[in-house]
Amino acid sequence: MINIILIGAGKLGSRHLQALAKIGIESNIYVIDPSVESSEIAFARYNEIPQNYNVKHLEFLKNIGDLRIKTVDVAIIATSSEHRFFVLNALLNHVRVNFLILEKFLFQKANHYQEAKELLLKHKVKTWVNCPRRMWPIYQDLKKDLVNSTIREFTLIGSDWSLATSSIHILDLIAFLTGCSEYNLLDLDLGNKFVPAYSSVTGARESKFIEFYGTIRGKFVNETYFTLQCLKDAQIPFQIDIILDDKNIHIFEEYGKLVIMKIEKDGTISNSEFSFSYPYQSGLTQLVVENLINNGECSLTQFDESVSLHLPLLFQFQQYLSTIQQNEVDYLPIT
Image (cartoon, rainbow, N blue to C red):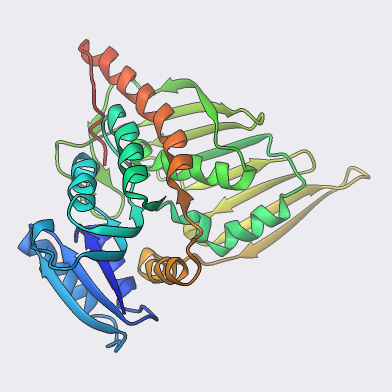
């Protein structure tokens, strides 16, 4: 019997719970969220999944201090970024945690990254960050196909895909495909403004969070250049273009299509098109937990690698906000 804790039962947390409803290991599941409304929605989504007798106990609590267990096998912190460090600190000072999964954007303040590292080291917690494209079969297969290739340029363009919040997902994908996690941001063209945070699925979010439209350009130390562009109300589909020496790869995630344009040795060009599907979070979390319990590892991004991907974005976004607000900003209000 294992103990699983999910902290945060909001939009994403409820999907984690749906996945845990499918767990293949006998488990006790504890969901912690001070919001009765969020817990009720999460419980309703949990009940959409057929009954699973591996779930021996499901309990909703309002505070970490309400936990009456001493050891947690897997903890998932799915709160918003503003609370995540403080929740992490409270959790590790209350119970023993073996494995931990953190949502992203990790933390809003730069000093919390180092403090979190020290905290995790002190409590000997193996930790991963939930950038799940590494678990998608389409990208796992693509990584294998590109093992002897060099990605010269990686470009993403689309409308309303939450550039501030979601760029870390794309940078993580580039790191996964190339095996390189160090990069520099070369240029931010964000229109000298920010907008209230939004979701392409659920619409506007709480006004305390912000978002950007515009373009980010950068370069990984392995010579892979990247451009990430988010347009406002332009009806441009989410498209990834990967340029290599002998072929171009075009990926349309929302349509489940991958197109490879290959340049043959004789100069002719051939096109191949493939269809794919990708899993939702409600079909992934249980696999992560099962891998952690059975193997002590999972396919998500290890914490230290994710920190190296987060920090350049954090610093550049903070500097950008400081410039346009003409006031020093010491935290980044994205979630």
